[in-house]
Image 1 (tube, rainbow, N blue to C red):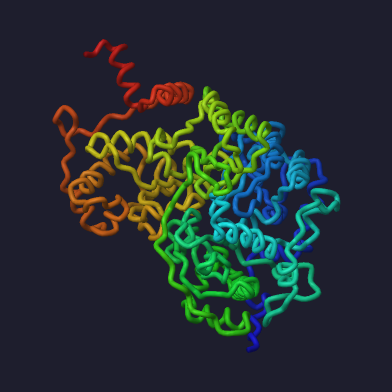
Image 2 (image 1 turned 180 degrees about the horizontal axis):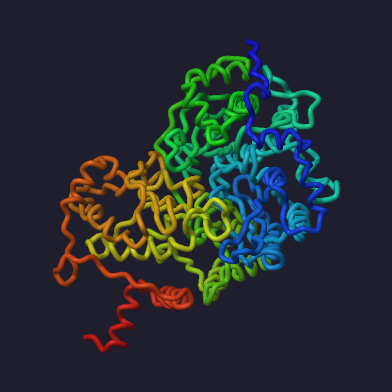
Length: 637
């Protein structure tokens, strides 16, 4: 079956970025020229190409002064298939954060690390150090395949997990840019020593299907123009939805036989969450089941899907350029047919799968090979030293002393792997000494399952706060749940500072999406296991009004839920009309019997930090602590 050629790119009125990619000489220019210039920032064209190398040019908005130049700095993102970070790479990143960055590391929702605050003059040294420590930033951003995700739990006695990690790495290698630009610019042409590439992957990259490969080109799979937009992939095992499989452009699910041998993969495609406020043509979408593929043909199938998006994805309107829009516009059947043309044969039917479940793998766990792994909760992925909470120092000490590899989780947490049982107590002591909670049962469940993106001050797309706002908002949600008699309740809360959805708020039970300064669009009705999209409930909620907005919804949930029903499942079952009707007729009752909403006050940032630290150390809520202190100060009984 011969695939009909797509229309030539010139006839499709390509976007400005398409022209920049075409002129770049396979991601070389103008970055190669401008990195040598004594300036503190790159040109607009260079910024677009710099993304492919794993870096975003940013402006710290906290430091803006009217009439003065922006405070330019750079975010570097690593690419770690399956979230795997060898010990020497972790220690290098920790050092770079102090030497060139803002003294923090940030675990991302795609199992990589981000370094913030790097200056242009230090960018080359930082990238070179990462590569020489067996890491990479190539393809962590840009219009190509991003970091390939996989379940983070290092089970050594479950063959399906081994296959998930192996194929996450192999798919990452298959779709890694082949241009020499990365090593030419950042390492002066010196190719780093890395693990030997799988021969099957190497062969698959050159093997043509029916138009999947460009022969005699520097980029055999991507061609001159790379992808229309970013492409996100993951590999998981049946039942394990720790990787939010429905949000990916491409998901492979490992299928083994009764002996635990790999047979093939179920394939999902077309998920994606990025959208734009007030642009109804942009939307969050869950992936569809597409087919099953035998293990011997998985690389050709991946290439066929990538080529379909590469050649037919929208290169005119970048807001409409993701694979989800192609599948939405075409329908799944037409998409399957086009993939079959590239694949060269009919696709096999999807195989049945068990129910999906979300797990975060926190605390101590058996690896299955006599060793242990330990999952550590990291609020919003930010590894830092602050007050008595010294997680950055603790992790450096542990990795240095025990030479442990790390796996980052899709939930912005971190797993220490390959721990000898006799080291368990000493590692716990290091963590406890640095104020790190080691027992996951001591973490408020609403905090444990929450996520937020960085947003302000560094993300150029942020409309409002996210990472800096969510701790206080979760504290207020917990106080409200306590007030209405839902003390033990928890659900998935996610927050982003803009509608691009980096912390995947559209799959949350309660999602906050920045829509204006200090205001959020609110989404309700996602499922605890991230298998159902939430829906927008209100367009603009000011953060001061969160209590009065959520109280009637929580009260209705308490009164009308089914036994064991989660908050997200409840919202999806009863529907928004019923929730709104209840809220409109709800009369709040304050502690003194009146109908007034509770008052809000603000505190200085330095006082807030001390308050939070003291509350954590005493195992109390900040609200509790403030009330106790004010009672003493005001001499109130």
